[in-house]
Amino acid sequence: MRAWRFLKLEKPYLILYAVGFLLTIAVVATDPHTSLNRFTIVYALLLNLIMLAGFLIYRYMMNVRAIRTMFDEDAEPLTLEAEAYQEAHEQEMLAHIRALNDVQARQKEHYDFIISWFHEIKTPISVLRLMQQTEIDPRSLEEELSRIEQYVSQALYYAKLDSFNQDYEIVNCDLEALAKAMAKSHAKAFISNKIKLRLDVPSTIVQSDPKWLLFILNQLVTNSLKYSAAQGEIAITAQVTQHEKLLVIRDNGIGIDAKDIPRIFNRGFTGSNGRTHAKSTGMGLYLAQELSKKLGHYLTCESEAGRFTAMTVHFPKHHDPYLHTLMQKPQ
Image 1: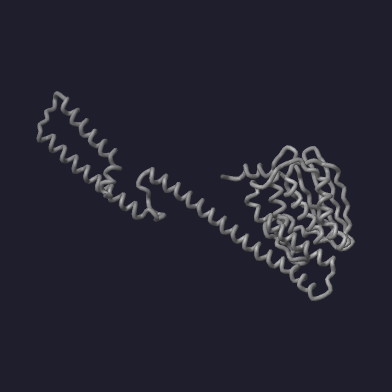
Image 2: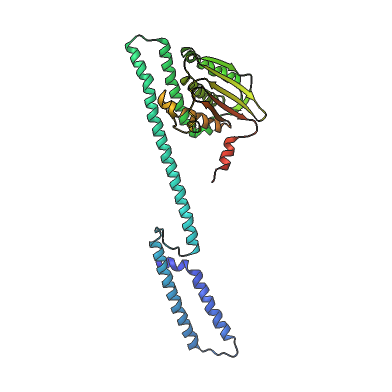
């Protein structure tokens, strides 16, 4: 069966060989100075058939060898087509390996996040258990419940990150209204931590999804509250320039080490502050940045250890940085 399949694939060679033989006979036969007899034609035909059979046997053996060594990296391809296919197959395998590595990396990141999330949420639950055995302080109870709600919300938005395009709607959003809603939701945390809030956000219209944008702002304010000492201050201001609109959240807390600033938006990065002052999953700022870019915004950070941290949400007027980043990525 394989030999018959081989002969069908070698049909162009057989036709070319037959045409060449017939043309040769025709040329010789039409030459008036040359005479042919049947014996000469039959003899020539037999010689050609023997040569053709030898060529086909050689080709068949080479094909069989190529099939046996097709998975050998050092094997030489039999034809130009086979070489092109081999290169395409290698590229496909490399792409497949990269895709598998990406999936495995993402699975590990999900696993790491879940583990750290469990450890994080155990703390407020343990505090609530302890409160059951002692006199319950309503303020402390509210604070721990808020922490649990924050962790649950963070996990929910993290789970939705890959399906973001199915759950968002870009509309006109007023930064003033969003800032006030955010301040109201964190009012008890500001009061219990004795942190002053300075709100200077005039009516400023930006194009975004209010639900996702509010989550981003909540993440930034939560971080400021976490790393600000009592009697500190958090200022939320808005600015408008020629090319963009800005919302700045600035605190006078512990600040960020200069060496950590370039990595604070990386997935799972906690930095020295996250390890020293509070347990952290390292997902809050990562989620905030990723969601910002998908909405056409982006975040930047300025900070000085021991003095301040300023997180800025940029709303470009005529430029989508996330789309630009995607277009620059190699295919």
